[in-house]
Image (tube, rainbow over all chains, first blue to last red):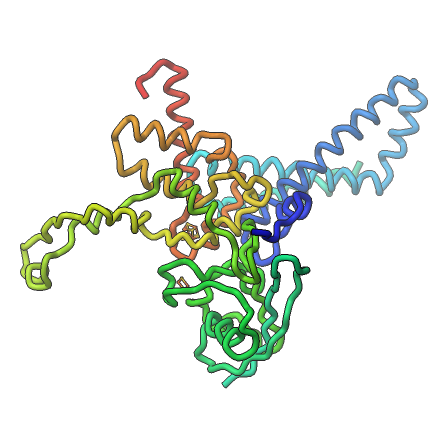
Length: 129
Length: 256
Ligand code: SF4
Ligand code: FES
């Protein structure tokens, strides 16, 4: 019987399809997006650190650039990713072992609001540098 | 009467998939299954879909209505139609589409059977013999002998095997061997009905396997979408807790 099956890529795209979905699915998609973002950042970070090999002047030039508002905004985005991924990770660790699975939505809301507050405070501090 | 536009997913083997739009005249009190029935009866008899009980018992009619998995036999038309845009009706996700709204569920049922989910609801073994005995205070319902073959027709409480949770699960989209929310909820249910060590070992072994509970990445969509309040996500998490605790005990040389 010939049936309609979708490609693996199309199926994988469903990880990010939050249309008509609830908080748990938003958390699921956000965790994947931030997870991929953090892995990309890790490699960028290693690349940047490798500038140290080129001596102090190359590093100083980069540090000067890193203090520009554009780079500071990127720092805030990075921190947002870390907060979303880390705090959601806590929620998953708790619910994933059968504790408060019924409260997962409330946990998500509380943790994301806390993350938002931390992010605002940190952003203010970052832009004071 | 309402005049309702409805957009239905179409696929026939050997043909490209498409959406067909129909305009249906239907009573305001209708349910979405009536809309599908009307399209079939008055507009296009080649439309393929499944339904039987019309009251959320058989689980056969499950589809996606405006993107969300539902049983159209219990969804009122006026709850999903905004009065303007067509209602979009599509087959469940994560199942091969056989024709139009009809998906191949054989694999899903086999998975449930492989987990030996032929479980009879406990209450069915304690039926009152007559209304009189039931009505007299102090007279407990009597146990009746279950026909030998009854369990073949009963799976487990509440779950109607509609496949909605399998369609809503994002993990299922990329691992078609994942036992899935319904199967794991059934394993949980079966596990809590037995103390027989061999059976417990078998059931926990299934849950602990490569395509078992650890595949779940906690989107909780199965629980959100399930029309029968089976709450598969909590059952999956409870199985994980039991497996993790058993492993911990084993690690410290304690009795499991
Ligand atoms: S667990 Fe709920 S959604 Fe899944 S098959 Fe059973 S009734 Fe349907
Ligand atoms: S027709 Fe049986 S559940 Fe909808």
